[in-house]
Image (cartoon, rainbow, N blue to C red; front, side, top):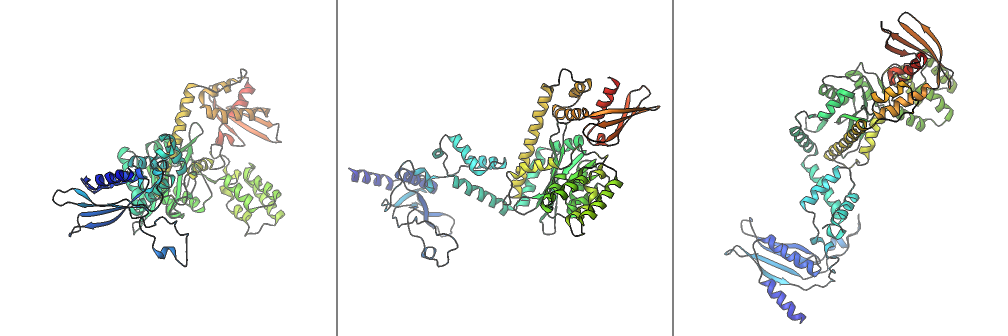
Length: 555
């Protein structure tokens, strides 16, 4: 009975006709899936002009043998592949009938010399696995969103219900991602980015990008920002945070421009890529950023301590105070100094708000006490003390921030996906995905601010109740209430009245310090201007001082 069924099957296959070669391949591959083996394309014949295929042979994937040079190599740089070709004779040969234009079966052999796969494993055989165009597009989109490859496969499993319904394996997914990246690089990664940004510009007329190339056409610099970036910089571009790091295939530095919005959240003003971390590259980037934003210079800048960036800022934004990130200085302090006493005394220079004359005297005493030499890290930090010592930045507005933590926060989002193997296009796409997440958070904050207001105690002061209506919830909780609590540690020592000014001498219960708060009044005796000897009011706001003045007047 089995022989009869095989004979009938053979007769049915040998009499098959196909409209084209692809139809013949699809038929034989489906037949192979039912039997439990995989198909491979083998020998092919062309017409005399080599313009048309006239014969095609399909074989079992176990057909033939591995070449001896791959099996018996004396010096093996890698493990030899597993043996998969064992001389199986199974094949299907189809040929083109020139008269009818159809393809017919010329030869068919179905004799396997190896075990066939059971039905529940057939989907794992090579010729029965493929990633459709729709699946490829979905994989690329998920990759751009920062989802790692093994998580993408898990998402596909949930989407299709079972792993055997996806149509491909996790290894196929990794191979596709690798080939996709190679195609981008082969097409010219820089040119691919330019094309991508031009498409963005077609969708958004205010989208801006500018790039610079060298004489050989290689990318030297790139900056881009969209409409929302321009609007955000106009509203929140008082303090800019710059950070530079390399996380791409070509080791090109990525430079995001970051700030703080009205919710005290990270906001992005644009992003750049440069070829070298030198003064010329940074000057070009900062000039393009300034031109894009109608020549608006930031009030102040915080960076990660790159000296080339520091000099570029002094050229392009000469009137914008610039300080190094306190977090980076702390990291270098721990890395270079191992004496806890020295570290503790060094931190005094970072945070002490005494006079410049006094801090210089402390430096001299510090040098004499520890015999600091010119080749030491401490002396190098002394040379650039004006960029990080708090006393040199008293009165400058940094929104109460000592570090570029906003930029580092953005970097942490980027670093979750970026690595040294990522292409420039993938880096730009992932940056855009992070930008979308940042803006989604802002929208959520806006909705929360419209629908609720922060809680205050029933006995809260009038100033605190008023403040929660004037500030967003995030700013009120993180800044205003913090200053309110700080004000409770202060007490009014004396009031000195003048003609149009009133000076308050304020002491702190937790520190042996005195502050002089000066209030200037209008002709109607309304508060016009307020200032303090510590100058924190300029840096972080005047809530604390207004609170003291209000309490002293009983308002």
